[in-house]
Length: 193
Image (cartoon, rainbow, N blue to C red; front, side):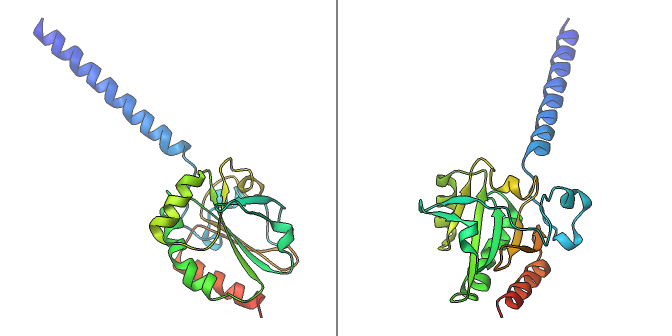
């Protein structure tokens, strides 16, 4: 009798373990993706998740910033815009943002340039805490329902769209690498000459 009870307990434990594994796998598969590759080396899956292409006019939107102000993309015509989609939980996004203040915001200060970072699917409180923890001072927008992001892509962050002074997308970077970041800076320098 004791052997049957032990076997039942063992079987129950095994089923619980299998159920937990299934739940963890489901969560991993359903989480919004966070990529680490650049568009040039991106997969066809990443490219298929991109809804706009270089040469397209950037879809217009209005984003509410962490400070409560609003920015409308079409009102930035006449400036080069680096549109960046990111999230606080995304390690490649964090690595990329560490370099932004000095290598992009400060570098292009005083030029016809706007760095427009938009947090995807996060609350104002989450973004504020992240900003404070990291000492970021550049403006950050909020896209809690993914409405803005959904005009540009369906999956994978960080994502960068370089938009020229006429409102056309000239470059798309998917993921983050040191090399892709350097190429993005080169492209911005050329557009701002």
